[in-house]
Length: 411
Image 1: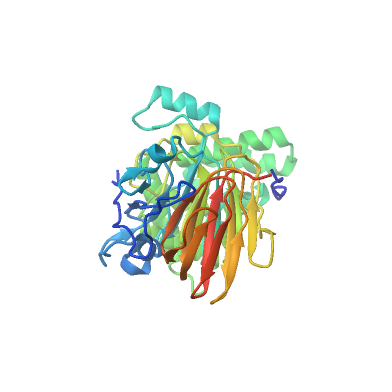
Image 2: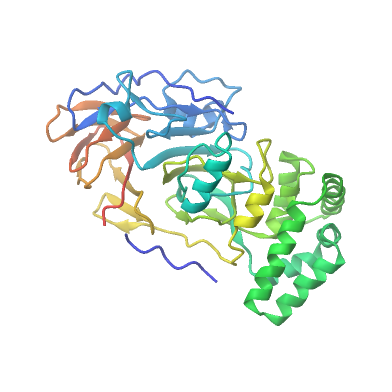
């Protein structure tokens, strides 16, 4: 089944130099920000990365530039004029706003709901560093590959039969139990069988995983015309050799978001980003439970126990038109929504206010921007601004401009 449309409603951060075109504003309605970059290993390298291009840093062409963080999260807080944004405005923002540039797969992961996040933080604060949940939305700015949600049971059963290495890894008893549950179609039995199947794969002994991944990829490597799924299996093995996560596409849906497409990821749903650039909004948390395709800490028992085990394909969101220049992406939570505005060269445009404080990223273009009480200042590609709730911002584009605004839900 397809998810229903959402209703309305240890890398150290590197702080860039302030952008030449983004003067610090004295107005209390709007501040220019300096925002940190995360150089995770999966990021795109050098200036091929959108994050590097937006960062305002001198770019190392051999280094990965994975994420640009915009917000008040303690791991990578934004600053304005050398002061923490949170200190300047006297509060924390409820969301975290990011740009991601993905060169190779991120971990097989899920994010806890609020109750589980509080429990994990209390029990292991050194791993789960805050007690907040982390629903998130990704909006593609290039073609953006991802895996998300469990495939229909019939597809998983087909893979269990088609790929003997999959069946050998879980063993005949568990494979037969799942195939039988699929034939019966009884929901509770099917969920139990899928839980057992996925957990058995993810918790299999390392030597058994390596043996079956090697056999699987040897077999696929002999195909003259492999399918897209088979190409993905081989690619994941190149990126993370003999890792249990190579089996993940046999369980999870594969999709490609086109520029402007977005998807919302709720708590306890498995997913992994594979390649491309996106804008990401999330609740202000960095809680991630991982179990494959990563050199980072894996918490496989927690991941396997927290998932919903529902077959679901993410709803692709196209956004709702606000006016001739802007669209808004709304999610079924209060912490965030995303607005995208596009201006032609020489255009003038006023982005109407939202009630709560917002962050604005200039993804490309140059021109000037002002709030109702502030004088106009220059913006350029990579400029980031804090805008006080209730404030319109007026833009005058010198070149074609795209901006993204993250704010709490406005309706």
